[in-house]
Length: 154
Figure 1 (cartoon, helix red, strand yellow):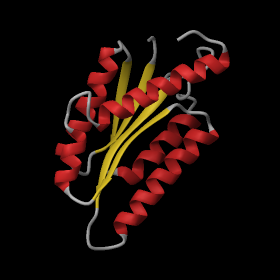
Figure 2 (cartoon, rainbow, N blue to C red):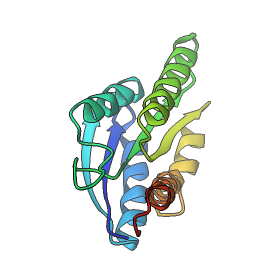
Figure 3 (tube, rainbow, N blue to C red):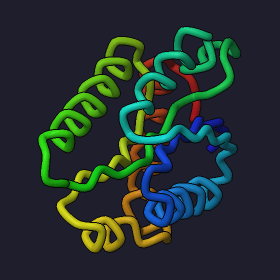
Figure 4 (cartoon, helix red, strand yellow):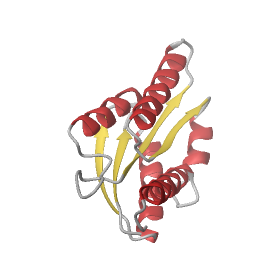
């Protein structure tokens, strides 16, 4: 597939972020898809960067306008002892979907919301079969569907 994807990754848990990124990159490279990566401190900043990319006209790319055909959000939120977990999870996911739906951005959401680091590592895995790879494949499928709706070939 000829496509270009923006990966936005929250780096709060670096080992988990590295595994998610490796999985997403493996899945993209297996399909010959080009990508660029932007890093932010944590999951809560990811929707802001996606909104900034949309506002700048970088995503989604239509009729050769823009730079990226879709986006992948990668990050992790691990439950702690306060309500901060709920605030971060709910807001990050709500605003990601708000931007994606409002602006028809093909988005693969790979933000893990887990109780423990062990759960996160088990889901991230680092290969294309982990959640990073799942998010990349979801993004690519949404790009295909968007192109079909717009009458373009994949």
